[in-house]
Length: 230
Image (cartoon, rainbow, N blue to C red; front, side, top):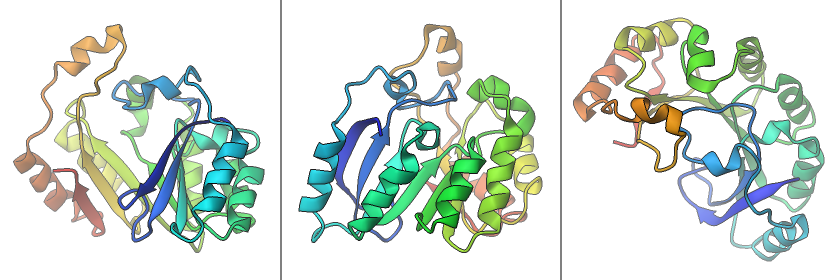
């Protein structure tokens, strides 16, 4: 498993659980607003897997969970065996995913290796190519259906890009089944971005008042919506 970063403890990445956060290297999307850009193309130095497990073994009495984020963890071939080892240490596991690998997600759920999942619902389906440089949106939709039919706690999350209109956010809320938890996050301009994306960085983020209004409007279609980061 290629791990490019480790946060020793976090109270915000796994709801209600004190957890370490592991950042997997590599991603099959390339969102222009990504705050972990160095992870996309596997250019970061890696942490030896033995060192990761030595840390987790040492912290068993202090931590309750492990968050596996990225990058995109589900594109790594040994993710299942990696999580099995974490579960054998007694940790709860939360997966952060873009939803692009439904087969892997189904395997993890079937084997009872996940306790919580956060899946990105990034944009209207027709705009995924533009926003994420990704076209296989049917995979994301399939992962959402898999989670819908699972028995674990999970959430979908959307970053409120000013490049997406109010009408499109309403369209997103209406165009999907009722989510158990829908987290909408404030957009922040990343410090590192592609030179070709500079015009996008010049678009002013939505105001707090706008986001609060969007939370209210979205709640008509997604009653479990929560606004974070404002």
